Image (cartoon, rainbow, N blue to C red; front, side, top):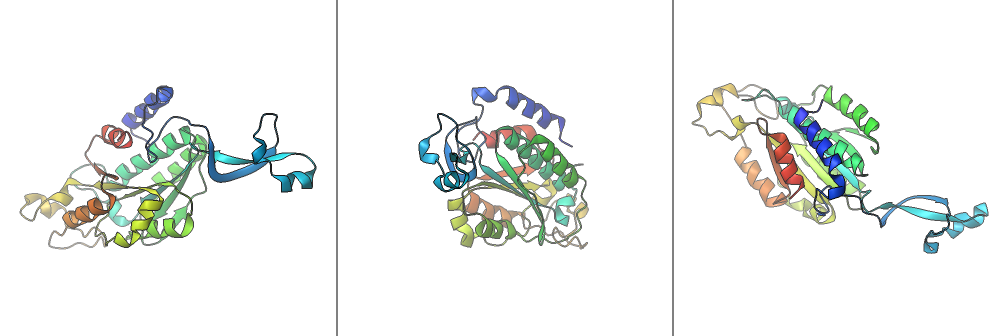
Length: 276
């Protein structure tokens, strides 16, 4: 399910975790930090040494013993992973790996690593509609079960609504999160109206693409890549919006953009991005 190079990378990170491999950038993975966050978690029985300011007097008076409010720690943040499962992600060009395969590798890697450092993970699958929204993933066993289902799914919906992740964040989350959108971003619409979401959330774009999508009209290889990325319908002319999509992505995400080519060395690219 996960490439050997990424499995080895996770093992190395787990071994070196206490040496603070990652920086403290809020969108990055980092070593455990304690502290009281903003998101309420639950109430529990008071234990000697607890901060008395956290006592929930309403619950305590009702149950006749002291209870304190518990909050998610700073390292226990919510990580949203949006994964494009439209037909265009299943295309293969110059490399044996499809865009779906490469995107899934990033999805699986970040899910497992986020759970390891104590974060809560939510995976949102989308095409032209929301396909599935998982419950919060908190354990490695839960992560593997969900990832196995995603890895074995067939891509049936042909189109992509690239605005769905932004609308989902706008309507569903009032607290700050680290959110990653994994897609080929083919035929991307303008995103400027969602600029406030970038200010609210740590938002990252993970673009997966094949080298054939970057070729100019003069390239001889274009005859081998003649499907429209979104409709999946064959055509007698090559048409790629890669250059226009790139301009839109760089203008909106700036340094919060990772390009993963289907023939790239994934481990190196992902580690450099997370450690920036």
